[in-house]
Image 1: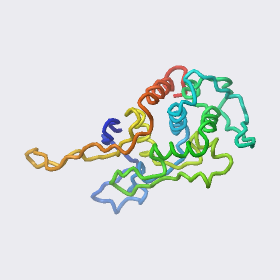
Image 2: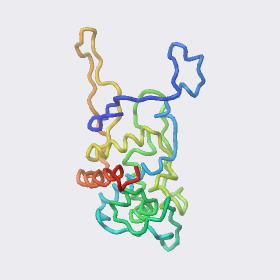
Image 3: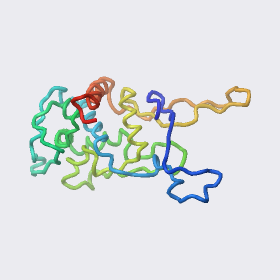
Image 4: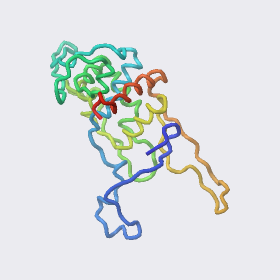
Length: 234
């Protein structure tokens, strides 16, 4: 749990946990801060990257129709199989591609962006690099350079596959959307103070970079809110 406008972490938990006074009695896996150290394929949460990018580049309108019944697409003269959805979705608006979490729709957004722009937005959102949290061993995750992509990466990366991320990276990326497009450095210490309460050192919020425009974030947030509506998938 964090405060999006500052990046300060309000709560972070791991399970199984351990007693720091008797840490040597616990299995090594219980000592690891999984939020920073463990890497996984984030899946649909990663769709904010491609969705935010096409809005930022003005490549799509909120109510533009995207045909999610397509099973393949042509890219750079080659036919590519598009990923499947859990059930047929047919033609959806861009807004519905987000709310219904369509893999085929997200893949088509990636194709509109192209390899280089998609990769640059992945980097802008903080994937493939450490957040700089500073507590515990942090994994940078896996984000391959474009020259190492295979022919399917352009359609799989927008859906959160062919990429490895830590829970904290995903959390910070979503926080950037909540913070009007500014990615913040996660921090856990706000101040150091003496016993009587006077502050010795205070720590200010640190902005890492802007990922999306404020306007793009407003539109993306509007679509993301529908994910948890009766029409959405969450």
